[in-house]
Image (tube, rainbow, N blue to C red; front, side):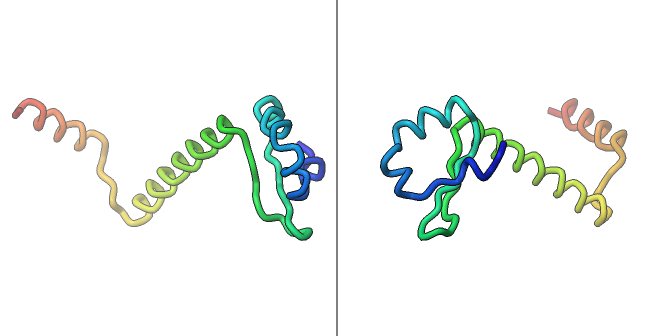
Length: 91
């Protein structure tokens, strides 16, 4: 994606909203909207947005896991499995 071709002023958005929405679904490229020459908003199609959100959630989980490892808040898998089996059997 060439970002320079995806930067448009807010006046362009106002004048071409339907076309922009249609193209975003097809091209799946983000669009940067400027106001007074300054980037203000990034628009993207819903599928790309959902994918971004899922990626961010996974990255947060990985970061949390790494932090727990550094803090020593881990247990050997065998112990966890054993505890789960005992808990399931006691139900």
